[in-house]
Length: 217
Ligand SMILES: [Zn+2]
Image 1: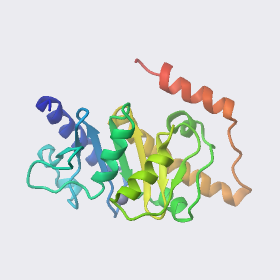
Image 2: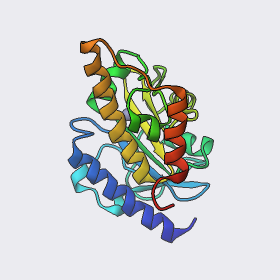
Image 3: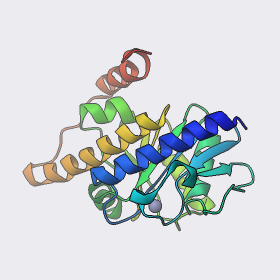
Image 4: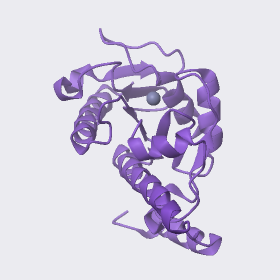
């Protein structure tokens, strides 16, 4: 393992966890976030700790093959899901999982979010699918999440929350903010006759622009 990169990822995960805490995205309940170090290792937030008191060294380094970890703090209970997603998606380097209110509302109604907002289709790649109901932190949940995330950067998890992925942790975090906003818009639209969906041609155009042409890459 590249120690220097692991240290950098511990700092980034800690910084993003605090940003998320102050944004209100995780208000009240827990979420967890992680970043890939390399093919075999990731860094993830510890289980059940006060976000405000976290420091970079508290971010747990986990071997994704064995799920063994370093240090005194236990990794998040959802480590199984994170490591399975990294194994399935080599291009993914960051994951954000939340129990945010609006995403959880749609997930609890066990509905998907159709493609309705331009930033949703740009960043998340289209509709937001629903991973079926399973026990948190199990292989079954990992399997359902991987299915729902196929060719997407975000998914809902039935009666549980939401998950977003990105080429960087910053991208996954932006995705989680966009997913929560989209869920809110989707719910609001129900009261004025329902949202109108964006066409597949426009989804393809928007998403391709984001993945290949946007920014300084
Ligand atoms: Zn969770």
